[in-house]
Image (spheres, rainbow, N blue to C red):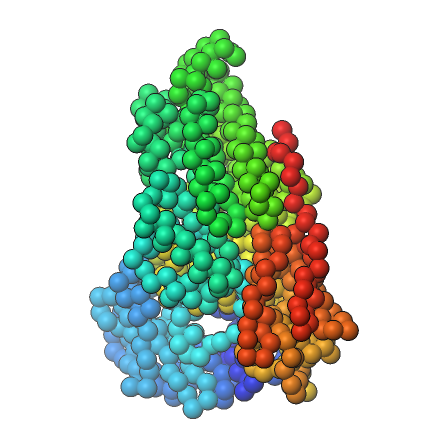
Length: 640
């Protein structure tokens, strides 16, 4: 008999805890990744091996006396399992790394079958609702990682009634506009908001020279995002400028080591070493950035191809005439002669130096936007070369060098883990974070980019991260980095969107007290479900929308209050640093990388209050005013 867990929900507060009846690393990992916390007590958890518990979710594996009493009977025959189908995504192939044998089972009609063996139709995952609570059953153990057999366990738990009282907010998502031109934008943005996405990074190159109707669509996207307090960044992918630039300026096309034009995958690479080509690219890019209401720019992946390095000359860049002439002048030989042999280290160092110089030049160009728009944010997306150390030679990437060069300039550093490590599992994010320890005086600027795409390696049970694996990736990344970005918005399965807030929940302690109050500790800002008015650490709390409270990082005790504050903040895209009462209302300390905003409600009306970039204080009163922000952004150019 394998009764593992019972999660009890309170009438007013959703429980955030679990308890193991038997060791099960897989289930523990799954539940932790959904924001659930272990407990040794019983206020929120019941473990009763012989009978079903009242008010919780029981999780059973395989045949057992309790499973039999709940309507899962042994049937004749042995079933070999290797591929299953799940109702969460019935079209998705789910393939196990290793075959498993089970005794066949017959489920009573009260069970809702969530997954079956692809070939025999045997039920392998099911839930049953009880008068109080529910039961989730799997035909086999789920495995050590928690996702190698049943990727959609989180969706099954949600269907069984699993909820959370704490949800993370502040995720970023890359947005490829080409997939979304015909979508209902208000509906799409509402989905992002519910999933906890606070900023999108838009494929800006698709709007270079775009027709008027396409630009009008972009304007609408930005305006609707701003209405919903979602920030919008222009995503730039130099040395790719745009398809239009590639077509109109063939003289500027980059060359690979084989002499072919560098049209690689979707990127059309431009020779940015040539002064004339660089000047035209700069004019195009700055025009686009100044003509739209962007909150910032994301300078992504400004280095060279390819992931295979010099071993694949057909993709190895840069070998345009300007680079070859400069290399000849410096070293007295054509760089093609150094593709192998003793000269290879010199060539690889030259590429890394050139990439660093281009990054410095282009960051200086982008910084000019701040002269007219001081709240404009600059983000750098850079491939990791500390965990996978081969990336420096393959791409000319040098994360440590770029971090040092941008120290003190208030530029977020978004680490992209390369395709070579996408199969290594969620635990890699702790190691990646460790590799960057000490490389910057401001570790808070380190962010991580999760690539949610089909992987080229042999991975199980799905090619693309989904369900329990996605939840674990996001949970681990959020535990080690203050900012997490998802690549990309379109590649996320709709069934996974409800998991994002749960998986990124920064809760480290949750306890419902005998008084009915909630004791909670957060490592970062979060939304906490709470219906009605509340006192937080004794203060009538002004950051609430009637269904939830917005809390900064810290330790909090929440209790019910008799009345709502006369004026309150119902939404925000700021990082809240603290709240304190004042004579006229409240003082709210905040920080934001780009221009931020609060949505303030007083009586029956709501008002959007813009706030400047940097750190500052907002006075919440009958006539809300913002104290001058201490803008921490530096206007100096990138240091070499």
